[in-house]
Length: 411
Image (cartoon, rainbow, N blue to C red; front, side, top):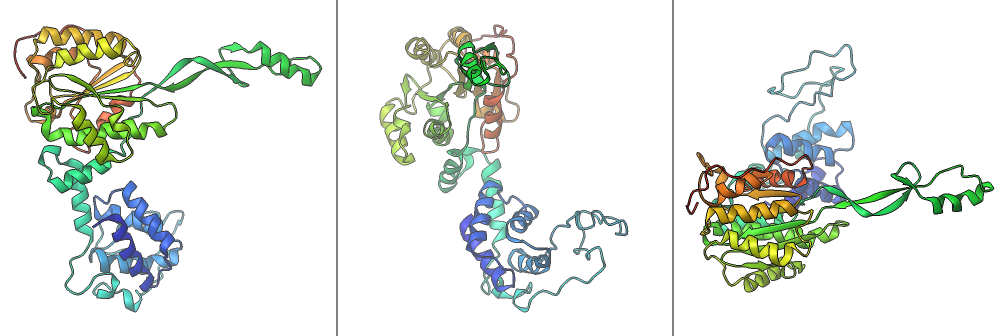
């Protein structure tokens, strides 16, 4: 069930059960469900209670309606109920069978007649299945299931979520500077003298200048060869979200490329607001879709045609590929060494990394790995959080060293 539909039905049940909840609270609850997916019943309970209950006297009625709509299990215990009362009994176990009475030992208020646990007027028709487990289990599956194992409908849902993912790059100092009255790298003499006119020529306050800071550029190189086809549909949604959505972030700039047997720049194609139109343009712009992989050649073309123009200089470069290349490992290592000299950080996303027993020992992946600052899988929606963390990291770079085993191979 969609969060909006779930919110409307539950708020309607609360209204009939005696809890004053209107359309504004339904909209707030739906927005909270998108920000905090209800992966468990406890999580759904606290999300609903935080957004829909405005007074302590409404808790009993809310619990009764919640049990009627989402099941008969007791709601989680609020450990803050007894906070600050020296005469309160010891805190109960975290998994009690019933909700404890309030600290003053008053009996809990009886549930309204229209909000009993077994009543069908609490938001469920007779014989209709309850709404909670379907939404929670579906969200949990989308979070942790590999993209290659999702159905077509689930892939569409995941792509909608991936487009909202923000890959925030670390900040860097620019050559431009701005005035600062607190501190700075040097004194702005002109502004200091101008400000001194207000105090009779006495420079009471010194005006400094400090260099501006802005996000580093982001470059995404996505492998669209046949071996990456199960993951390409989701990764292209990630590229579209970075290119189009990144424009709404001040100072952010993202460039998107795809490669198989050749390199294709998709930044302009993915800049459309309509995601379907953007992906259709991207497919038309890359004629080598689902072909072989020429990893070293793609990196060479990127550095020769775009890296010298400054796209990769000081940028965070994200390579989404399984590393199964037809090039010689030594050629891949040579191009990765060139890329490392101009890029600020290289993040390699390989969905095969999540497989049990995977070890990049031969081929293009083994040749490229020594030059990477981060090596993550990105095979699922939850794993993309590791990608975002690796892109945003701003620690010192790991030392680059040649790979010890550059054997021939196509892994």
